[in-house]
Length: 457
Image (tube, rainbow, N blue to C red):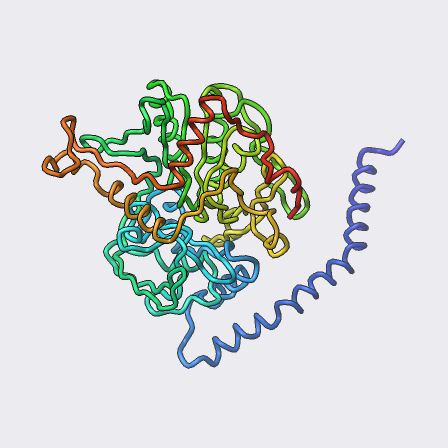
């Protein structure tokens, strides 16, 4: 029998032997790392020694990390120590900036949508605008994340953006003043006296309407209140308007879908190693008695695509409008060891219940295997889109002042009422909702557009 001390020595000898066996590959790995980054170290040293003015701080390191992130994809980025607080505020739904949500299309930064009520929306920034410059700085070869950081800043400071409009060649310069962008993301169809929202679109048919402009920390809370108000009012159908919604927090989108389904997978995220995280529906408080029509547009992205695509794939909603933007990637904020900085890194793709990957990639861009395809396609012209955005802006910025405007021609005996224009997409959504209620149609459990795609990232 071996004494206990003998066992300890045997174990220690085994560990030491293992370490010696691993020394050659460890040394080789360290040599490979040094070889890879030796040029970066040399450039840093040369710049600090010879640049015409002294270089202070970590600006070279910060710039190198930003460049590394840009080489990955447009949605990854570096968050410097002085940017962390602002980044956290943006996710919470209140920040200082102009309120532009960006994506990348054909290598160019494109406005997915200006946030409703933001300085950008008030100044006339439009969905689809291609961003050319900010304060004269050309944006070519800059990541979406870095451009967004250029737009935030201190309240009251001016910023000028240069854009190119859809189907136009001349550049347009737009001046704005940074201010608080409070993302109150749940709205109704019309404003009532005192500026409150009315969510009942058609009282006679009991068709409700909820417009969700983004997905922030308070979105599902406000959505639940609006839906509860509709259900108490006897709503039998809901038009969920996700047009010009650039997305936001994935968890908020999952909770919204969960409100309408009681079982099954709502969403999966898939990493490069095929690791899958599934998000399943829970049965309590499911509003399964209400019919749903979802409105989408080319500016519906990310979490908006999760909601529309999942409800479509699960046979819970009819989707009306135009093909969505195709941004279905998951970014994690990872704090760097020993630093007060962080990176925002794309780590996975969203996968819908029927196997579709939302994200538009180089491999699937020429096919139907990206974004959300509507069940009923209705394409708006650029003039119709401008009119719709103007109508939304007028409605969203009116607020409580409506009650004071008694002389306005739209004023009624019950108080001032202003509502969205009834565009062709909304008119079709109303028609689809009526058909659902009449039993003339029903959502297909797996959309005809979705049954054949099981592409992997």
